[in-house]
Length: 256
Image 1 (cartoon, rainbow, N blue to C red):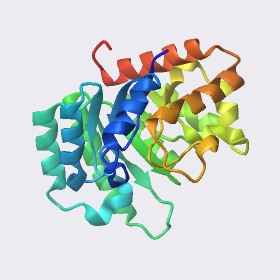
Image 2: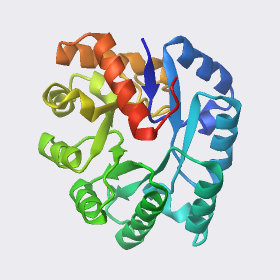
Image 3: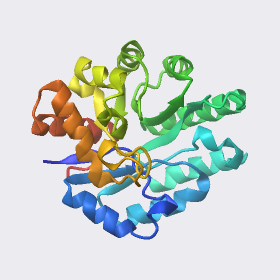
């Protein structure tokens, strides 16, 4: 059974002590590909180096909306140059994060729209991070005409999910669905078509219920798969095959 972790921060310093072992455990658990999304310019080179060393690991480049204070005026130009030179599988993670309530919304929107344009120029999907701004992001995507990507760690309603699906986007789910209190997310799993979904760990964050309070890692992705099996009444093989093909198609991954 083969799985793809569509969103894992292997470049995170929390993996520095045992990164190679984490990657090997993921492979042993059936993870055939992993995608490292961009966060800041300063972490891009680490992600690139990991991908150069491992043929089953791929990178995306992006400027994360939670780290606006780290992004400098020339980083969008640097991002454009990286995309032209290094062939990422996506742009992101990008989007809007209005969680704190005191963020510079205009700066976030400008940065997001610039990254949508880069994705359009290079025909790349978007990896989207959104908190407290899902309707705004959906409106921006609809107006942009760019209709491919994935909203990672989706937490919205079924209606909001369907709007994104209608625009050509997927939603990605992971550890949070393993908690029984995540009732809305769990209803989504049963309600939406299987071609809507990608699986993700978001490691080292968002561990599932079996590893609550611990550092997450991609080898634990099977916990989310088990929740899909429970809620959809389909086999693990069926769900793994579908979500894997969804990721391969979206990111144009090589045959694995």
